Image (tube, rainbow, N blue to C red):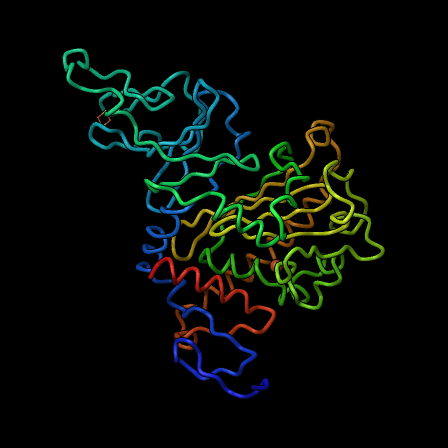
Length: 382
Ligand code: FES
Ligand SMILES: [Fe+2]
């Protein structure tokens, strides 16, 4: 069949030319029932990248994170391990910590009736507890959430039986880079936070994933990025080819807003990775961007069908951050890309309830791989 002839789409919704593939229907981006199903069957069942481990350096430092419908309390225990618990008191269910972040000295005490939990989640004190000697203090400790540290981040899983971390998170990186070893040289876990910017995006989380996966939009909305990576002007995303990193333009010295020199190359980065940009989507909520001298790490926190908080970390060698070296030009490049991308996502979100988009839109060939992400979403939520 040649381009221009018609084929029947999988949903049978419309006959599409072969060069087009259907998107999800508009209500997938606005319907509270769909969002609820995603919370339950995607965010509460898989691995969720929650906290930068270096943000919890001392025992008792904590952050609270929304994962699906649950608030999760993440802290560092005295053993040095990162621990995570459902943020719910085992007595009558009061929210234990209402702050986004903070620090306790040695325990978490519920403000309601003062049930008190150690940093490793055990019930250690409660009014009249001594008189109730049939209460098992482990049994009435906080409900634990699975934790796995990788790339310097704490990834959490609310499922009782988590899926294999290797077959999900690490496999997504491998599928993109071609080999699990390709990310090792960047030594992401040893890098230090140089800058963090949060974006409160008025768009569904899937808009943000889809936008990150394609580069059909690069020539229109990313002038600075396309200047640094001229092949992006063709619209084929770095994620389109397995193992391919987009090459810096001939006159470009570094991954900076004006193409001027960046910082020293990370010592473990291979020659064939030098002067290249790799973009990785780790479903459902992480983007990793690798360039020779730094790493840009996005975490998404879906808050509502039409609202997603994006936390973007720029990570550098510790000595670069400690020396006060100028990172502004490298931060500015991806900050502009983020703003340009999130503006586009918000623009699309406005139309999702329109009757014009009731059956969705279409994907051109350079976007067809987004259809695989749609299949992944459908498979999970049924
Ligand atoms: S609800 Fe927490 S101590 Fe009563
Ligand atoms: Fe973009």
